[in-house]
Length: 471
Image (cartoon, rainbow, N blue to C red):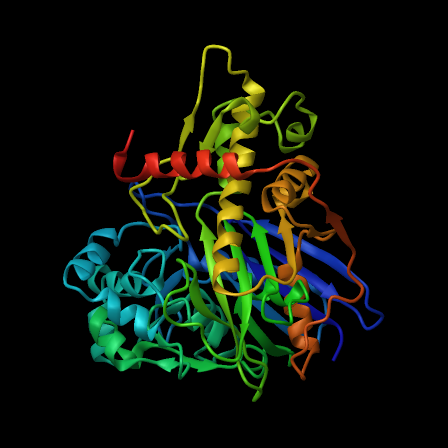
């Protein structure tokens, strides 16, 4: 079954890792791709560029027996079943073009149906309205639909179709579309009709680890998952209450809940499919997303306030919060538990004496305080067990210590920044479906200071002031 290749097709790059029979894992390579912004609020990728990067990394890896492929989640593509040519750029999960449509559906009182069936609110973050937009606005889409040649799906379905000829997605990715019935793990006819997405154009839904067809050369594509669910598996999360938070472009928290979806009141957290291994019972999770995390630091660099990421740990002086300075990282709106796309990022508490270091730290601390809000929502929904983190920000000692202080509990910090790839490898390795953290190095950040009650209250007030243009 070795070597195993894991490819993480992410928002800003595509990375590949190869696992050998002796357990050694090496980075094959990383390839970036263009971020396309044809209009304000629109975010697109070229599907052929992404596919080309996947193929180039497969070739660079050399011979392998199995492939695990992680995807962006809610990003969507429309393509021709015969030629495999995309009809439009991929619409990325960050894209906000369908906000008017989601507001129209809310005004029509239809959000209750999406929450009851899919477990998701009406928000342009999810795939359904983007798929409908492609049907309505892509040249030749309707003609191809009449001919039975139109395919609509998340980006994984496009890649799998092009690589193996299998038109399929997995349960974790399908659960991010607003079209899946979370209880049955099948496409929901009522939801397809509500959003106007033809059921016959959608891919087959398969287990996360199983059979997605053969690649040229004979290797098996044996696992496919949303990147965040793959990271959850890579974190070794196995029991209800185990939570991981990945700090990337955004910050994404997932916590296992067991073999049944946690529908109903979940404090703004969203029920989702975690994974299904072959014919075993599916595992479910609660999901919480912060829409702006690492991208806020990139913004700081872009405007000249931050020289490089490493500078965060060289700054001296008290925390920004101790100085009464807060930043709400709502540069793309607020995700969980608010789901408010009208919110905007802002600093609060600035004076003529506020130093540059406080501005930078406030951004870092704001991301941690938003993560603490997610953890608090999880704690209200179910008892917390283990919290672990990964991603770029987890490499900052200042950030991880501030987060542990804000949580008032220890956090496990992965020594690897690529747990999505590790999770995909483990999904390929684990026919029994047991995630295993063995062989991975973890550091533990223990809380070291003070009562954060007042800080959490001040930050919550700042968040409210960013909503609905409040000042």
